[in-house]
Amino acid sequence: MFQRGRPRAWRLDFGGAVSERESEIRVYAIVRSGGRQHKVAVGDIVEVDKISTAKVGDTVELSTLLVVDGDAVTSDPWVLAGIKVQAEVVDHHKGQKIDILRYKNKTGYRRRQGHRQQYTAIKVTEIPAAAK
View 1 (cartoon, rainbow, N blue to C red):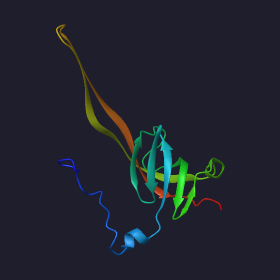
View 2: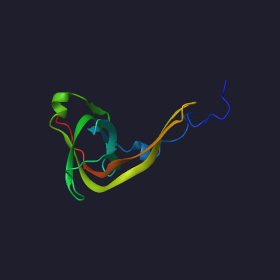
View 3: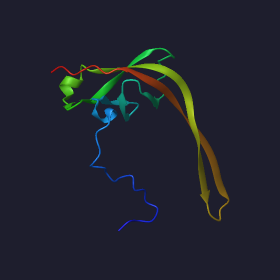
């Protein structure tokens, strides 16, 4: 049946009216940056791995893997080759520190290492529409 402590937010409400936010068409894209994929929309601020060549205020282009414009989904690589998502660099900063601890029992072997990943915060300014 139900697991103890499991959130019940997954239940859907089928009887209510559709709110304005749900009814508006939202354009978003899946972009690739630093070996990762991010879902972005216009106005979003996204943390990506550090872009060392960009300074704060510069405009960067991100390669697009998928564009969703309402019901139209564009995933054709030939069409997406010409679509670059425009974003503005907002900030360069470090992420949270992670601790790497190595320990072997009964041998006196202990090693501690820390790491803070470098990030760039970018604000998406434009997602061009796919040519139809």
